[in-house]
Picture 1: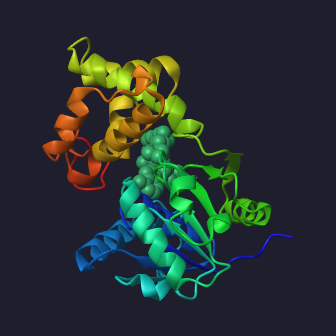
Picture 2 (picture 1 turned 180 degrees about the vertical axis):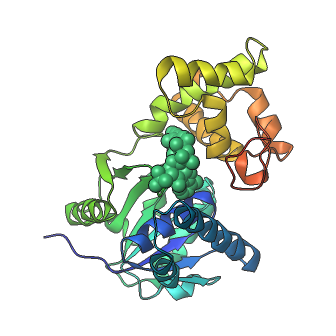
Picture 3 (picture 1 turned 90 degrees about the vertical axis):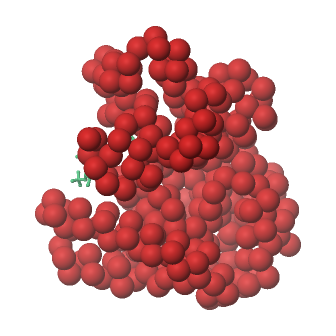
Length: 293
Ligand code: 3HC
């Protein structure tokens, strides 16, 4: 029978990490949320306040429940504060050496049966797992943005992940109100492997002045019934994150579909990161806002 996890940790409080912390706390779990310094922690705290505040404003969440959710999240700048957790979800930027370093440190801090999960969207879970002395307890738990809204979790098992760990994480996904798909360790898993070729193609249409950003997005929203167009979705995902995912998938498969369109790297270098920096393909009213100005 699956373990009922109650004490969990999140490492990295960017858009995804803060969203994952919210999802875990909403399901009644006690969350320790860690980022590297006070500025990063404050940004994560603000993201959570904004997201839960919006739910209150829309009448979807009682203010007392919002307070209870936020009280279940303890913030810290120290990985040592994860020593009591049963599962940790890592959601730091998509850089293998950074993730391996964090997993190596978590391995020393957490009890031997703590499950170490990565929210990586394109890196090898297997490579991350061997940075620890417990590869059989390492798994992928890939959420989608916005994490509180999107129903899917991709559960990624490596060739050495223990079946009981897969079972525990699948059970947790169900408790979070998510639907899981369990797959093997291949760059992009299912959803990103299919999605990012399409997003990259849309960016290249824009870069080549084939169509305006509004027309590209309208075509996919109104012609194909998608909730948002590809350029608006790139801004939601984050231009830096999108670049890292494409680059990793391209390096692994050499599939030209995933060769990052040059403007993506240029935007990243110029700090046009999408919603989180206030400007990407579109300009936003404020950080984390969907409102285009
Ligand atoms: N955080 C929390 N909740 C949010 C949110 C956010 N950032 N954005 C929207 N929501 C909630 C709203 O509060 C609202 O909740 P309610 O229905 O309970 O009131 C609901 O989502 C709908 O929001 P809105 O009415 O403001 O706006 P839309 O109806 O346009 O929906 C959207 C916004 C959910 C973002 C929708 O446009 C959508 O589904 N877009 C596609 C998102 C997508 O494809 N995500 C996957 C990206 S790929 C990925 O994440 C993989 C990774 O590895 C990069």
